[in-house]
Image (cartoon, rainbow, N blue to C red):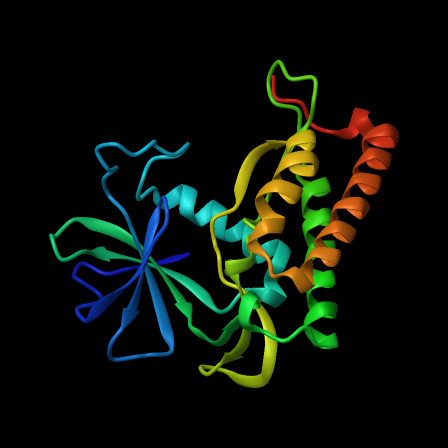
Amino acid sequence: MAEYRDEVPFNDLETTGKQGKYFEAKELVQDPDLIVKEARTKWGMFETKGVHPLNDLERIKEDLAIVKDNFAEFIPETNLVVGKNQKGKEVVYIVQHKIHGLELKDAKPDEETISQLRIFFEAVVVAYIKNLYYPKNSQEPSSIFPDIKGWNFIVGRDNKIGGQEGRLYFVDTYPVEGSTVSYFLEEYIPSIVRPTFPEWCHPLIDEFRLKATKRLEEYIKEKDDQIPKVI
């Protein structure tokens, strides 16, 4: 569900300098424990357009539901607010508890963080298998998965709810979709994901890829007839 406000819901936003394809992350001056991701409303002149339209509430709801349903223990409290931006245009805001801590590149490779990463990667494999489907006219199945770049993880604490220090959080809310199995295993994990992680994580990434390869090969071999096909 989204909260609707016929007004500008956030008047004291400051940019973080982090802009993705669909959202720009901003900080709320009055509440340093929140991050507000404001939906973009216009593509850049020389920018390659995304698969989905900008500021699409229904799509944003679906994407957030996928992330929450499959990775709930790693996602900070996240909600949707629909209101107006400073130009008076109705936009979608993703409001998320800010995690105070360190990105993986600055974090220590302690046993707890390594254990949590393994649990997260296991959840990625489970979600990928659960969402397998054959696109129209395709001989290879595709699926959906979180954008598991290293900078989307933070080891820290949610000050809004308290809790333990040094917990692993995943803060991205826009999953990657339409990826074939071969692309996911042979290009995305080794060539796109692995370089974004610190060196101490590389053995975990390699382990994750090997396990994902084995599990997917076994599942497709045994249950190919159960994978939905888009007609």
